Image (cartoon, rainbow, N blue to C red; front, side):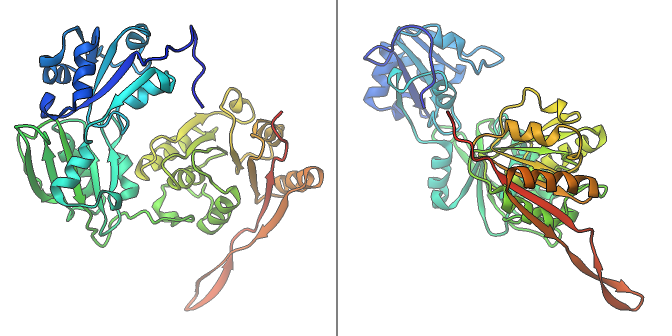
Length: 417
C-alpha cells in the first residue's frame, strides 16, 4: 500500500528520476538516464557518483549530507521540481531507491537501474545468480552472513570498505570456515577493476579497493559452526545457563507459532533468546522482540543473536506486562518464563493482531493453572509434552525424563473492524 503523504496531489509527470550508475560512468548509461541527469535542476548523489556523471550534469550537484539522512528530507523538500538522484547500480537492490520509495508514491518517480554489483560479480565468475546466496554487509553487521554458511554453497557479500574482506575472512576462519575460497572483485565495471582470490585463513591481499564484493565458496572444517535449516537447533549452539527452551520443545513451539514471512514475534521471558532467534532464522523478513527482565540474560540473548546471524533481534529489558507498553503489535506471541505474572497473558492477548497466534509453555503448576483457565475461557489447544533422553546409569543406560511441558496454543479470531 502506498504511504499516506502530506501536501497536494502528485503531479501527472514524475518529478524525480533515480538513475543507477556504475564505475564506467556515463558510458554505461542509456539515453533516458542521461537525459534525466542533464535535465535535472538538482542532482543528488555521493561525491563519487557526481564525479562519474559530471559530464551530463547541467543543474546543481549536491552531495549527500554526512551523516546520511534516511528520511531524505533534502530531496523531499524539492517535491515538484526536476530532481535526479544517482545511485550505485540497481537502486532497488539494497540501494537508495528503497529508502526513497518509503516516502513516495509510485507516480512520483521513474527509475533507470544499472547492473548491480551482484549481477556484475556473477557474470565475471560465471555463477548462476539465482542459485547464489546474496547479502549486503555494507554498513551492516558481518554476522548477517552466518546463516548462509553451508558447505558447498556460494555466497556473494557486498562489503563496506577496503577492510571488509579481511574482517569477513577473520569471521569465517573463527567460525570453522577458514578453508573457504574468497574471491575479491574490486571496482567492477571501471578502469580499476581487479579480481583476486585466496583462502579465508590465508588471505594476504593489500591495497583493496573500497568498492568491493566478496565471493565465498563455502568449505567447512569438522568443527565449523553450521546453522542447520529448520526448527530445533542443538542446545549447545546457544550460550545459556539452563534458561533455554530445549530443542525438541522449541521445535514444537515454533511449529505452533507458524511463522509467516514478514511477521513480528514477541518472545516474553526470552531467557537465552532461542525462540526469537529461530523465528528470525526462518526468513530474512522475520522480526522479533525479546522481552527479558534480567539484564544478564538479556545480554546473553544479544550475544546469541549476533552469533546466529540475526543481530536485528530487539531486546527490551523489563518485566511484563509493563515492558510491553508502546511496542508494535505482534503477529505472534510466545510466553515462556514469567508468564504466570499478573496481567501478562491478558496484555499479550489484547496486543495480538487479529488472526495472530499465541503459544505459552508451562513447567510449573502455577503457570499450568493459568493456561488451563485460559483454555477454559478462550478455547485453543492444550498439549502435554514429555521428553525422555537415554543417559548413563552406572555402566548401563536408562531413560531420564525431562520436566513435562504443558503448551497452550491459541489463535485470535477477532476480525478487523
